[in-house]
Length: 105
Image: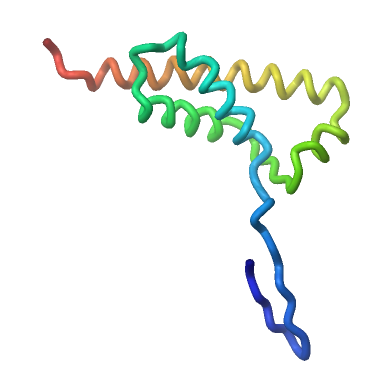
């Protein structure tokens, strides 16, 4: 919570519910796809999440359900397509970077 004193009154703001809409979607997808990448460590999966999120626009909301309610079918499909594209890229990117930095046997 943030307290703000302005003039003759004090206001309290609660920003705890504010979050990037894509975070939960990306995290859930990374967890679901992790079994397809058994060589990925937990740190690599976290990196995949970061790479994917950095390629998506920030969409901050208080409640995910509100966001879904106001989306058109086209917007929902565009989000699904965007998620697929960024996650595929992120897994490939992190895997390639890890292979380049892996110690040779």
